[in-house]
Figure (cartoon, one colour):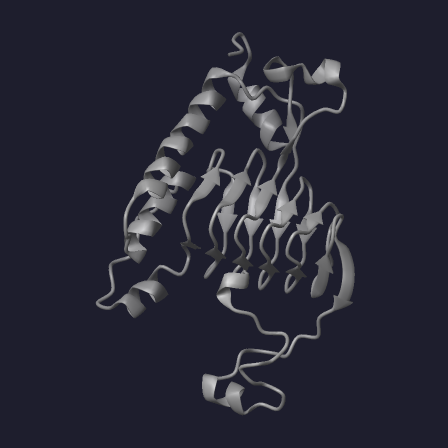
Length: 240
């Protein structure tokens, strides 16, 4: 552990994406705090929507009280829309640098290295095994110097209405625009403009998405031209 470092300045440098030291007492304690809560969440049995929201509040150090409970599961889901649906296990570094919008879904075994801010917009679906790596290391091995050397990072921003499919890796500094789809197994190294499909390692633009407007009622959707249960663009939740 590194001592004799100005912890406030070090934290500020980390949050601004500058070189900082990760193995100082305060940052080690911050990761341990998050790790304890995440471990409890991952080991917990069946959880209600409200219990899951309480865990998320603790992980992200959100001091706001939850709204009063609803009388049904459907009401609870609507009331707690600001807190993500999470399939466990989940892996998180600090927790305090994660921001999510309304009605976000996070599938099994996702990893958040939130050295810098990781933001996920409303109604975005995150598939299993997705990794958000907002932290990185110097390329110079002498500067890197194991746990005694400095690290750095850069914010990750995912817009609203995105689908990040399974096993995607998103690297530091990447911004993914609203309405994007990132194909399974992709490594996203550069910004993605809104409403595009990208895939590959490194991820490359495949095509632009034409938005269809606000969602229709379920009955209208089933009657829409070209819409069926076997539509080639649809997929089951397990493909997320």
